[in-house]
Length: 248
Ligand code: 5RP
Image (tube, rainbow, N blue to C red):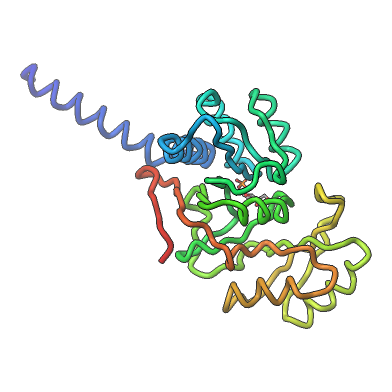
């Protein structure tokens, strides 16, 4: 065959190999991609005195690792869990108490599920209460997630509810009355010393109404619906690259 013909075939093969690699990106690679994308997203807005709110979980960990590369461009972070605080400190990033930090420009965190309104289910890592508090104190909530977290209707992932230990059975009965099947997350205590009930089979027609209803049960600290304060932007990892999604 002519040399030019062979070169063209080689280019086509190379292109297809690249495509195959892209198409088969693992979930970990997608998490790393969105972690880096979040750093790129906030970087132009960071100043010497900026303090960043940081979430919890394996996707948030990817963000922390990428953030460490630019740690000299901002002041520090507020952590949504003890585990996140440890990881930040391990990278030499200063961790502030939220009460000292005041209002934050950005909160970056993962999710267990997101819909197109960027209403979320969170709390798979049991850090939901601190996550919700830091998100509430932030001007912009940037959610980072791979596309396996995208759903049409929230609720396939069991909804975590943080509960004061002595109220566990009472809260469980109240949740059953609302139509859910609460399951006690055995052996897990939150950073706040509370327990988690994971609610299965809950019909989530209005995420904001259910978030408020569950929070009104005496003994509930908070629940994992982030609907009253949804994310502002989602950086979603897909095999075609990271997509920026704004709430519908
Ligand atoms: C922890 C969370 C996490 O953001 C959520 O569970 C997603 O975790 P991961 O990034 O490991 O999939 O809400 O409480």
